[in-house]
Structure formats: structure tokens, C-alpha cells
Image (cartoon, rainbow, N blue to C red; front, side):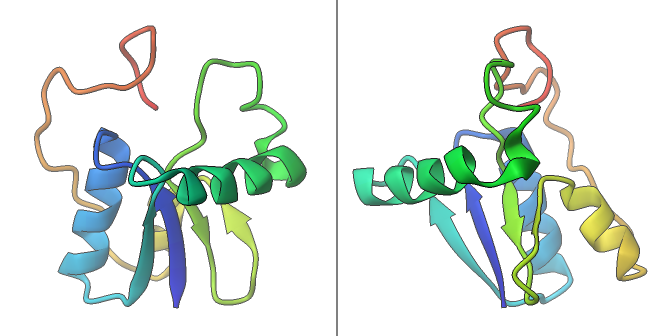
Length: 105
């Protein structure tokens, strides 16, 4: 089962969950805004995994983060679906962004 760290406030996380649900892929969703335990769990991963090297200090959070069945970590949720041969849908969320610059998360 895929584990996702994300937030219900994040447009990218919402789209990722939409695609998981649409394709009936089992996943565990950890909302980092739900409680401090979830946030600390994510921050521990973010502070120790080299995949976040370009995220720290950039103003980005690094969500959605997917932990795949084999234990590998990816920030590229679109590629997760493409590699499975699945179409990625991006429901219209015009004006939605969680970056300070108004782009991405």
C-alpha cells in the first residue's frame, strides 16, 4: 500500500488523492495538518531523506510525498501514475496554489 504525506489545504495533494481514488489504488493518507504527531512524522522524514535536498530552504513543503510499496520515496506523484500506465487527471483548481509565489506546493 502506498503511504501519502499531504494536506487537505494543498491543491497537489487533493489532485493526487483524486487520481488514487479514481484508479482504485489503496493508500494510507497522513494529513500533516491534522495533528502534531503527523507533522512531526513527516518532518522527520523530510529532515533525513536525501530526496528532500532541493526542497529544504526553497520555501516548498515537499508534499505530496509518496512512500511506495518497496519503501522508496518520491515527490513526483504524476510519474507514479504514468509509470503504471495510468492517465493523470488534473481537476480544475484555477487560482489554487500553496507556494508563496503563487505556484505549486
